[in-house]
Structure formats: C-alpha cells, structure tokens
Amino acid sequence: MGSKPIVRPKALKQGSRIGLVAPAGALLDQDDVRRATEVCRALGFEPQVSPNAGQKHGYLAGTDEERLADLNGAIRDSAVDALWCLRGGYGVTRILHAVDYEALAQTPKILIGYSDITALLNAVTRITGIVTFHGPIARANLTDFSREHLERAVRHPAPAGRLGRVGCPDEVLGTGQGRIVTLQSGTAEGPLAGGNLTLLQALVGTRYFPDLHGAILFIEDVGEDLYRVDRVLAHLRSVGALDRLAGVAVGQFTEMKKATPDGALGFDEILETYFGPLGVPVAYGFPIGHVDDQWTLPLGVRARLDANAGELDLLEAAVS
Image (cartoon, rainbow, N blue to C red; front, side):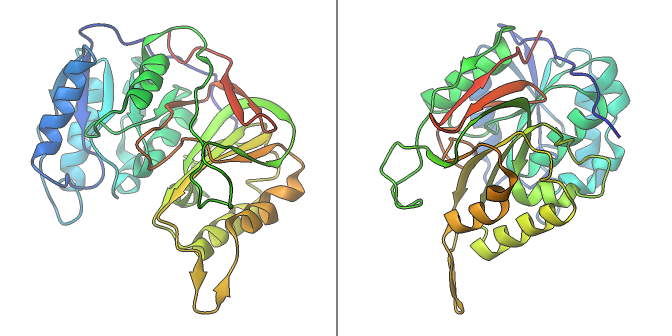
C-alpha cells in the first residue's frame, strides 16, 4: 500500500482553538491540565480541555471508550483547529482501529505529540496523508528552544529551513558537548518518518506502519535497555523496513542502560550493525525525543539530512 499524497493542515494563528486530549496514559498530577492551558494561552491559542482528560483507568487516561470519545469529539468539532496531546505514556495502540480518520481527512487538523503518540501520528499520516507533528506534549514546560521550533512548524506556511540544534551529551559515544556524531557520511533527501522506536515496532504488520521507501527515518526512545533497542532494530531489519531508507537521524535515547550481567556493547556498535550496511547517511545526537530542548518534526514533509555537518533542513511547508 502506497502513501497518500501529502495534505497540509491549516496554520495556527492568534486565537486558534486547541483541543487538549489525553488518548494514552493517565495524567501524572492535577497541575498537568492547568499547565497545558497556560502554555496554550502563552502561545496565543485558546485551549479546549476534553471532557475526559482528567480521568484515570489504571495506567490509562480513562477507558478506551472515554479516550476515543474525546479524540473523535475533537476531530469532529468544527471549532477545534488542532489536537495537542497532554502526555504520552501508553494506550494509543488500543484505540487506533476506531479513530475517525474519515472525519479528519475531510477537515485536516494539526496533531501534536510524541512518545506513545508516535502510533497516532503515523496512523494519521499513513491513512489520510495529513502532516502530523512529532513535538512537545501539551503539559510540558516549553523551553525557548522547543517553543521556537514548535511555532516554526505549526504557524508559518513556508519551509522552516535549517533547524537549530543542540548536540548529544558528553556520555554519548564519548563525544564532546554540543556535537552531532556522523556515523555514515553523505546527504539525503526524503519525507520525514518515524518517532519513538518501540512504538514504531508495535505498528509493524499493521496498516499504520509508515512507508519508509526513500524516507529519512528519525528515531528516539526512553528507558529502554540497549539490548532491547538492538532487538527492535533486528526486527525492523528482518521485516525489510530498513531496506530502502534514504537516511537516518538518530535522536536521544535517554535513561538507557547499556550493560547486562553478561556484558556490554556500545550504542555506536548497535547503530553501525543495523544502519552501516545500508550505505545511507546516518547521524546521531539530534534534539529529538525525551529531552527538554526538542525539535518539532512534521511527518510526511520532505527534508534534507547532511550527516557530515549534522544538519537537518525542512524543504517544504508543513502547514497551509
């Protein structure tokens, strides 16, 4: 199944109404909704909190029915201009089958989130062709860096161009502060695809898995042991998902445990094992993932990766 033609949702402007939804994990404290509404207003937007956003059902933000009601309600609400997920956690894959993709295709809206929301972003882009946004969750305290990149992506109907960057920390691959690490040299162009690595694996074999043919794949994760990352990449290689990539931009793999009682490998060794033989540009250390300073990356938009310079340029507008 091929990908849909790219569909750009309308750019946000002063006073745009933002539907705050929690389609995955339960909110962690009572201040999450308050903080999210304050962030929306600070950006010049009008927040609309979904009715069940504060619900809790075990580790979920309400039952599947409650979370779907909020998500589909915001999709169908003509007054809502964008959907901004309050948090990740776990739960989106339980409801992907019942999302109203048809209604969203008829009235494309901006969708923002990351981590577990990776599953929803990729499902929407794959099924409808609508550009979705891998970026901060709504309850986060936006740094100046994250705010700048979010606004560049969702407010301006023009190519964002070269993204500002922060480098990988000292402990990663033994590099210096502020550097992006080139693993395989070269440049490549292609549509952006990816997100949280664990969630991408969860989509393998479904209609929601992204079309990676000629794509620049970006990946990130949190709290995963290195051997688990190894296993996920082995799975993606086994199903042929890595065969036709144009390039790879590796983000942050935070809180990673690299050693087991049986020994250790370096993260660079794992990346080289799976991406080295592909013969495509690969660089590591981009501000993608579970970090305070993070990019907002639009899925489906063409980008240029320069692995030698450690740079990523967005070549198309993400919004209309």
